[in-house]
Image (cartoon, rainbow, N blue to C red; front, side, top):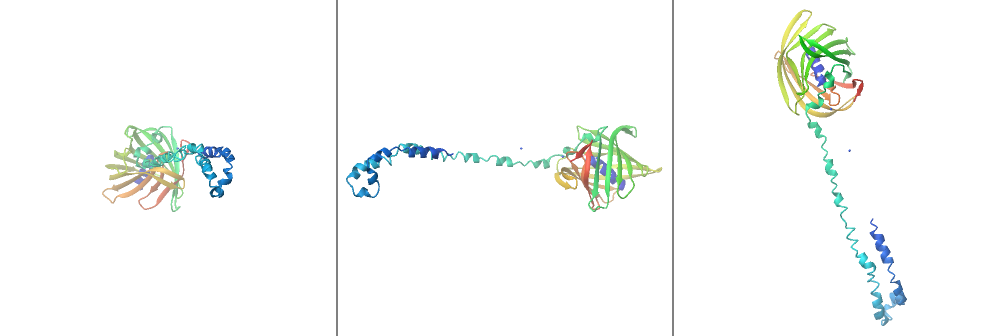
Length: 314
């Protein structure tokens, strides 16, 4: 069972992501009301409360008075419907803060993207290398996995060979080769089998090959049944495996190693008709590495550091 889950972790890894200067004009014009010449009409006195006294002048002065109101020199300009121009509520039209509508940047809708965002052929390209360290949330164990990609054959079939050297803080190091083929156009990986050389020699063959599909929409799942043939120390056994794999969408996840946009997968696996054991993985859309895994026993492993071809993640 642990081997199966180990294989699941290995494979899911791929899985193993921008003046109103009008007032000035008005003021100039009104001050420019050079009608102050009319001030010579000594009506300046009559200007204020004496008007009633020299009632006779007031007739003559009232014409003069009327000019000042008709300061229509400034008036027309005043009426220079600048006030309307201020009402140049055109500026409000800019309130066509249509820019807010861009705030309709539901670009978070990339979270509705397909699992293809996490399909990274570089992780199955001969010559590539990558590594990551996962730490259990209860600090009970830390696992570092260093991988290199080459070519090989498995049961006579050409395949990509991924060599995994794993060290754990509470156990012996192990070395496992995983053989896979890739259909880039279909965003599909087929896992043919694994060969573990240490701490013990164990070969597992999947019949038919175990599929990792990335052409999934959020909420979409697929089922698969296959047999896994296990050979160790000359002892052979076979098991029937039923598996359901679901893509739950692209989500933001924060772990000790950083914050990532990650494809969230849930895989439920049953062996020989037993109870299905669920494992959830979050795969970085940028690198394709697993950044978090929720195990069937409730423990959680989280990325502390990683790199792909020498480039740190994230």
